[in-house]
Amino acid sequence: MEFFQRALIGGALIAITAPLMGLFLVLRRLAMIGDTLAHVSIAGVALGFLMNVYPVAVGLAFAIIGSFAIEALRRTYRTYAELSLAIIMSGGIALASLLFTMGKGFNQNANSYWFGSIYTLTYTDIWVIAGVTAIVLTMVLVHKKELFLLTFDEDAAAVSGLPVKYFNIMLSILTALVISAAIKIVGALLVSALLTIPAACSLALSRSFKQAVILVVVVGEIAVLAGLWIAGVGNLAPGGTIVLLLIGFLAVSVATSRIMRA
Amino acid sequence: MNGTASLQQEGCHQEIVRLDGVSFSYDSQPVLQDISFRIMERDFVGLIGSNGAGKTTLMRMIVGLTRPQKGSITLFGTPAGQFKDWNLIGYVPQRSHVNPLFPATVREVVLSGLYGRKKLFRRVSKEDASRCEDALAALKIENLADSRIGALSGGQQQRVFLARALINNPKLLILDEPLTGIDIETQHNFFQMIKHMHQRHNITFLMVSHDMDMVRSYLGQEPKERSGKLNFYVRHSHDLEDCQGTDLLHSLRKEG
Image (cartoon, rainbow over all chains, first blue to last red; front, side):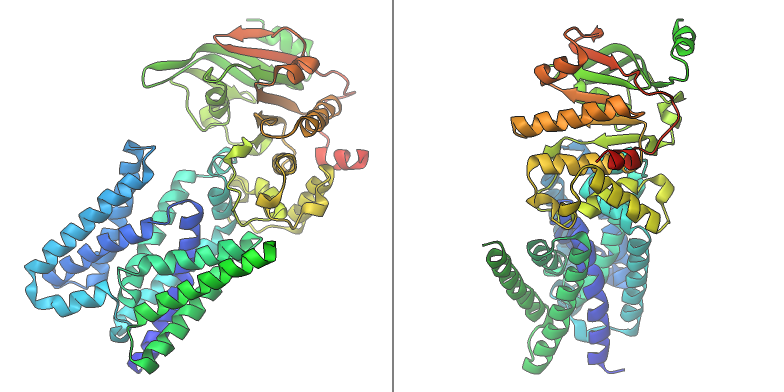
């Protein structure tokens, strides 16, 4: 398989899951969690290089630990939810920079995780991304009713007897999975864009939850595939073209919703 | 105890909620102290108290969102910790709780009233969908079914949440400040509708409110019980011929 084909497959898969998880995060006002976990995950990637273990796997473990740490801190500082994100994020960056300077030899590789390097996806990477996509889609499809209620009104979900704690843990783990799988594609610095911008477009345009879910995936797919193509043709950084396209879509969505409401 | 005696007196009327010496405090600041109270089937209970009197805390405890630090709560005869039939309880949250930008239609919100523990791993059936239409019709919001929830007026949103709570045909309906933030006329209509449901249907109400006038007009001038800063106003409804369960949505709809 050509490197560009691998890039297309990896991109198309992550363009389903990242915007989908992002929609749940944005609706629960946790938009910044993507950025935080991406930076924690990068520290894991660096440790993976140091120990000579598959970096994405270590990044994944770090992201999961990071998401639980955020929850724990959030419970301590209940009214300052964003405080825990700021702390964990700077912790992640600090640890990553420390680990990266300890292994001076792999600066080249480090760049590929900060900025993404979709053209260097290996077969292992593709399998990991495919596995993550399968898990996320299964869980979201099986629990779409409960996730809707949990996101719309967490108290009502608890009153209906839903195991809210279990669902919150599930969402944290799924988010960590998606972020660590997405890092090599768009880069830790831009993961947050793929999580949040499709959700922002969709919030501006959709009337129903069903529409919102379909729209985030459509926006994500178009931006990733078109972004890859433009980057390939123009020899540009794919992470950059994808995110700039997303921002373009957002501008169009906001303008459209203003016109529709006027 | 007069518990058994009154159970016999009231025939098939069951004890719905029982609070025994319930206490709760936030960081050593006591909010509720030694509250004991019983809600019987077909009671309409108005829970009145000033801000900070612990109304919301007490209500959150009854629906299982908060656990009492002392005392016990019994729901439908089962200790709250072991209670599983949450579909018997309909809950209308404070409207300020809703995110106005949330992308959901009225129909999606009403249908979500069915998504409880018993519906885990099940699809939305045709029967569920038709219950949803019944609930929309019963509250006369069928023409709003495809509107975005955030685009509705306060009074309309309140009907949507009531429809969501009623879709399970609950035996106990809990309303948290349902009259706040809507205009007087809408408040009046909404309260009329609830009173009507109480008089004609087998349903028990617990309404948290600080609107004294409207509550007193229906529940009487004096509270049945006082506990700390909380006042419980109660009115019982006997008009129903029998205590057999009827499907609320169907009968509400027939009445038009």
